[in-house]
Every structure is written in structure tokens, then in C-alpha cells.
Amino acid sequence: MDTAADITAMRRAITLAARGLGSTSPNPVVGCVILDAAGRQAGEGFHQRAGGPHAEIHALRAAGERARGGTAYVTLEPCNHTGRTGPCAQALIEAGVARVVYAVGDPNPQATGGADTLRAAGVKAEQGLLADEAEAGNVAWLTSVRLGRPYVLWKYAATLDGRIAAADATSRWITSPESRADVHRLRAEADAVVVGSGTARADDPQLGVRGIEGAVQPLRVVVDTGATTVRPGARVLDDTAPTLIAVADGADARHLPEGAVLRLPRAVTGPGLDIPALLTALYGRGIRSVLLEGGPTLAGAFVAAGTVDKVVGYLAPVLLGAGPAALADAGISTIADALRLDVTETVRIGPDLRITAVPGPARKGN
Image (cartoon, rainbow, N blue to C red; front, side):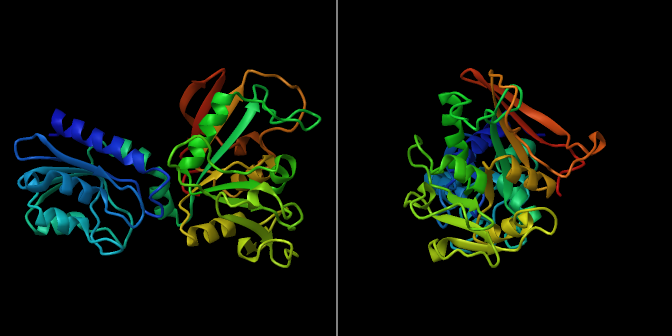
């Protein structure tokens, strides 16, 4: 039976893991806490950046000899392979740790097996403590490994009656400064920010992270099917962060920087590009999480493709009565086919309401 000390240590490890959000991709966020043989905290750490020491190594270095005979609490099964760093399972064995408690098994076939290695060396390995909490904190990476595509969070801002702009197309600003600052937090936690040509044309967005110290700038992606919207001098082409302009095969993109052009097939049905092909291309570039900030047309294409894993809506206490809705055609023609969501959180952000929801069980894993 898990003790109060076990739960406290694992919850601390989960908190530590969250510090790595936005800086560890394509690796997961992981936290580790080590208690000595007497149950006193000896060391802790988290995975800070891809290519750097894993959480277990930071914690072992902090613990030193006090790790011998102690217990390590890790949010993800210790890795069992040598990549840019050595296997953490072997490091725990060599440090003399007697027990390892991990929350979630590693679904990566290249890294799994750490628990078996630990047990073979006589270390007691236990799985499942606070698994749901650890899974939630690492959901982007876990989803990407399981589905072979980036995790997609669709963010939108709208009035209380669901409008993202007025009838004359003005939209600045529907939501509050507090909500806009919160969006920069979402950007800082994502590997890539994706918008469509409509957003690029209307707003000329820069798409960088502002106001968050030490943030790693995400890859900026504009879906510009015909290569007609993003022109030289666009803010998204500045040197703040790397940029990709996704265009259709055969589109004339000679006016764009060659290294910024990503050519993709057109969608089989409807306008635009093939969304699964876009996500596959981003996954191949190491992108494990996407913040979709595109307008209603691009959002509709992602929903129709079954590739939205979370929705975050910022609703302002404002009424317009006319203007574009947050979501355009998503391939849903009858109420029976509606995408039902489970609300996981509602929070006041300044005067606005932030609603977080995920697709119901019937649509998960599409």
C-alpha cells in the first residue's frame, strides 16, 4: 500500500516535471524525487532540456551517497536505452537505489523496459502511483508517441455568443490583457504554433512568446495553401523564431525563403492542405505538441480530421450578434454527429472565462 510519504514524493515529482514544459521536446517532461533509506528527502530533479541529463540523473547527483538503499519516485518509467544520454535504469542501479516507484509506463518502444532491468538487478520497481496526474502533466508527449503525430491543442478567443470578430472583421481586442497573457503561456509550452492564411492576412501575427522569461520560442507554422498570403516582410518571417510556410505541391513559393517552405499534398476533400500530412511532417521534425491558433476554417479542417486533442476557449463577456463563428465547416452535418466534449476545467481569467475540454471517449485516438 502506498504511504503518505510515497504520495507526497510523487506529487512533488509531478510538480517538478511541469518545469520542463516547452523545453524538452522531442523528449518527455519528467520529474524525480529521491528519499534516503530513512525516508528523508535526499535529492530531486527534472528533465530540463533535450540532450541534457534526465530527471533521475539530476536527482541522483543531488542525493549522492544518500541514494543508496533509498527510493526514487519518477513520473515516467526510467529509460532503458542509450541516446544522447545513458540509460537511467542503469544509473539507478549503480547508485544503489533499493526501490523505484514510477507513475506511467514508457510507451516508447526504444526506451521501454527500464522496470524489467531494475527488477533483474534486484531493485523493487512499482508502477501506477498517481498515474492519472502524471499522465495529465505529460499528455502531449504521451499522445504523440502513441499516435505517431503531434498532440494538438486548439485555442480560440470568442465573445459569449461565439463570435471571433465583428461583422466588419475587427477583432482586437475581444478578450482581456489577462487572457492574452495566458495565451503566451500556452505558446511557451508548445513546440509549434499553427495558423492559417486567413489569420495571417487579417492580423499579420508574429506568433512569438512574449512576457515569459526563459521561454523557448516555438516553431511558427502558417498554412498558406496557394502561397499567396505570406509575403516578404511579414512579421512571421522575422528572426524571433524559426518559421515554416506550408504550401500545396506545385504552388509558386519563389517569393518565400527556400528553407521556410514546406510542400504538402492538398486535402482529398475540401479546400486546403492534407492535415494528417502536415502533422506527419511536423512530427518528423521533432514537433510533439502543436498550439492551433488558426481561424475557423483551419480549425474546422483539424476537427474534421479528428486531430484535435484539447480545446481551450477564452470567452469574453461581450456580445456581437454577427460576425464569423469560432468554428467553420468541420464535416458535421447533423446533431447526432456532433463532437461531444468533456469539460475538464473552467477558470476566470480577468473578466473572461477560460474553458478547457477534451473530446469524449468515442473520438479519442482518432
